[in-house]
Structures are given as structure tokens and as C-alpha cells.
Amino acid sequence: MYDNDDKEKTDNESWKSVGSAITKIIICICLCITIGFIFNSCGVSKEDMQECKSVCGTRGMISVSEWSCQCGWSSNSNDYVIPRKKK
Image 1 (tube, one colour):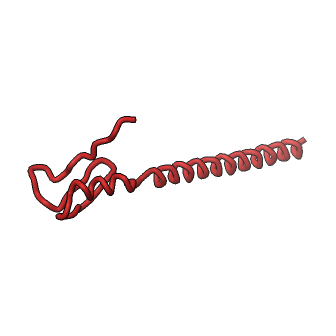
Image 2 (image 1 turned 90 degrees about the vertical axis):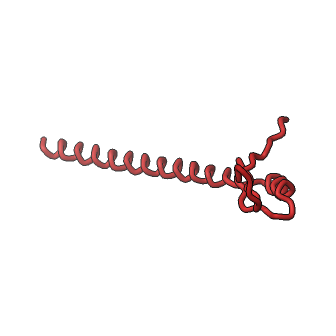
Image 3 (image 1 turned 45 degrees about the horizontal axis):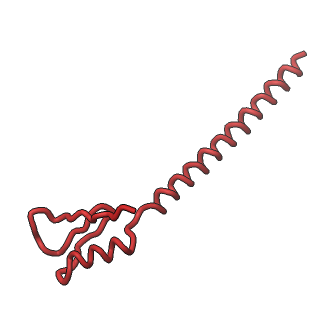
């Protein structure tokens, strides 16, 4: 009688540990995919770089981001928003 109870507890514990391991693996895979999408979508396109170079001219550009372009000359506001063409 006690042997059956111990066996059932052992079976339940093993299923719980398998379920826990599968859950952790799934969470890890989802986290890796999310991080991959984030790093893949970050960055500045070649078109944005060219547009910033043409706006800044011979004085050069300091930095370019997805949202702004900072040129090597000073003004009231050092950031210049890159206009987007609507398609």
C-alpha cells in the first residue's frame, strides 16, 4: 500500500520537473528570439546616413540616429530631424 503512494509521488515529481524544464526552455527560446528582433531592428539605414551627410555638408556630421542627425556646426538646436517621405 505504501509502495504505490511512493511511486505515484515519484511519478508526479518527475512530471513536474519535466514540465518545469520544458517551460524554462520555451521561455529561454522566446527571450532569445525577442532579443534577436531588437538587435536586428536597431540601426541607421544607408539612406539616412546619406541624407545626413548631404544636410551637414563639408563641416561633417557628429552623430546620426534613427530619429535625428547632428552636424559639426553649432546652432540653437544641434539636432535636426530627418524628414520621412510618405509612401
